[in-house]
Image (cartoon, rainbow, N blue to C red; front, top):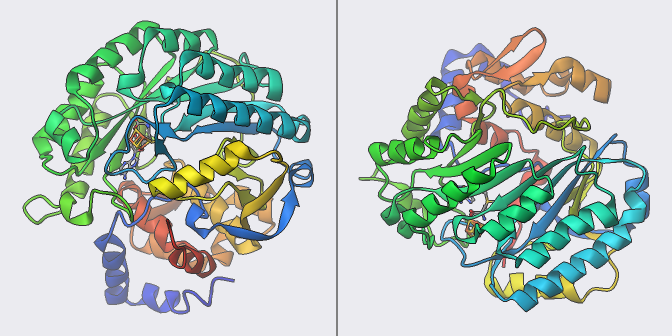
Length: 458
Ligand SMILES: C[S@@+](CC[C@H](N)C(=O)[O-])C[C@H]1O[C@@H](n2cnc3c(N)ncnc32)[C@H](O)[C@@H]1O
Ligand code: SF4
């Protein structure tokens, strides 16, 4: 099915010059896009017919579900962020939003009662911007409306430094949260200023000290490299500072600029040069030498980190994802859906207002129906962009076909030493992991690329 896209992959493999130039072109733009999930949300469109969720979830084959709640509010919008979020601190607006989320949960609950929830995550936006009473309600909705068992599900919550208070952390602790993830980006005030993130290093340190006292099983910290004004020394300073709080997990992100972000591509270059690849390599070496294991281009964690609960199993393919709230995506095996997506303030406000005013949440009307090709590509990418790689037998089990026969162009990765095949696992090498974003982008199907390129964002 892919031969039309890569008609000459065999010619490339047989010609060393062509192979070198193929690899060079892949490496020339390593951070063109971050594939949070395949297919990207900019490929979603109004569905031809509204799909009843009762039918969609009834035929979902996943054994357990992942419940995600999206809280699309922040104190301010950071200059690099294109997530679905609105700068709005008003408590009454938040309360109405949680009311809507509870109505949506009550309507969805009957559709998803057949399988247990193995993972529950609250993200955003900034979920801990909510008043404690509303934050607690999210757990009530998960447990009492959807039926999440906090003794068996891993629970993760995103936070940001200025919203960390003992009252909120007590709620998270009482609700048996396993993982708290905090965005820091940089410990240097001028670097936070340069990305329009209103954050002071003292505030970050206060929040971290408070978080440490609560001893959540997993503390994750997010940092960004390639920030305007960042040097190798200042990047390693932020990394070192983060490690002084002994986080079980750390995510390092290259700075991405996107349409509608205040931070532009030219801001990334220091003295005319893009330093992100150099900063990544230095950070990787640093983290590996400090006892962290690399799980993907972004994720490093202590190998022994765990929640201490006996968790329900959940497949790494992230299917059966139930997304509650405006901006949350839901993934069934063949349909991905969500509310509409935007970055601009007025479009985001109007999408949230429609969500809050809605009476009926029982149909999917915006998203994508995955064809067979894109189901296969999704499966491959989900596994390949993680350090453990794609077990070729798992693909055969799922699709009764061979990944390398369906997508022979994957051999290009092996011939350029970006991947190896060992013990029947196709796995990225250290260099391949570093170019994960470019590899992910290269493997997007022509159908999805066409949709992404014709997406007009407001
Ligand atoms: C879901 S986001 C937000 C978490 C939280 N609201 C905060 O900012 O503290 C998770 C992480 O993605 C990363 N991120 C978001 N947009 C990015 C961008 N344009 N470039 C690099 N990293 C980005 C940031 O490290 C951020 O902490
Ligand atoms: S990075 Fe986090 S705090 Fe900043 S706007 Fe995005 S979601 Fe909000």
